[in-house]
Length: 382
Ligand code: SF4
Image (cartoon, rainbow, N blue to C red; front, side):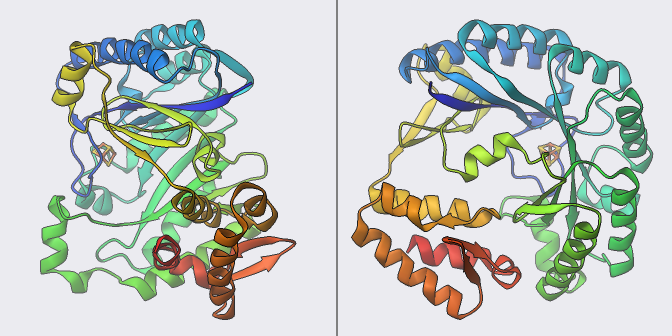
């Protein structure tokens, strides 16, 4: 049976964070969400037909954003029912909702759990007000603690995660230690750690240009990353992807689908899909997305059919992100020998510089390689 993952993008937020380049819009009225879900329902019908998905089994559903925790339990319930009518759910299906503090309370946590949501991923970014305010987050430290306390008190979610961000202006080692103390106080089963990256379009980019010296810089970030890994290991966390840590058994099934280069369908504005070896992307603005659906058109605006060389490079990059690494035997089974040999020479070069190592037929990034992973990936793509 063909199993796929499903991503649903919910592009509404209380306010736009100053570093955000995701597709998200200010949440002005509840109707914007209910209208959006009506359009999603239409997209589901169009895509099921166009992409021949009538017989697939869903292994994970991920409501990402944006701030999906703004969605009411009633709307979520209707949409999950619709999904059940269209697809089979695997017995061990993982259903994640991304949430932000200030948009979820114990009542809603209970309602989400009742609907079958079994994983929450909370965008915290920092436990300290001055960083939250600098980033333009819509909540403060008190709301973070309230949400985590309520989540733990309900006892309904065994599987949950939160994100923290490092590399912020004025951030010192002692600031980061405080973040880690909070992390270890709550000990989420899963945890993501990102450094602040600013694309050209975001307001904080102007600040970065003017005040570069206020940012702690790459060396500081590298030492923080190494230190954090050591601490987390002592508490039973395993880094299973460059930015993701989990206690055993709590790795995110949905994200593993991406890194294992397996199939997924993305619904909603700007979502990506990977089906039958084709990468697809939906219209990237809400108005364009809605217009296409209202005209009964597919929202997919780009389709890339990868050749074998591109597929191989992508598969290697995705696998190198994870602690599973690249399995040599699998490459030889899937791709022409000459292409694989060419790439293995590249991996051997990386190994000579101690950026990766080979263990039991798998190539895995070393800690050193993790810090320059993006450069290595560009070379693999070349
Ligand atoms: S909450 Fe997330 S998606 Fe929304 S504006 Fe902030 S960073 Fe962007």
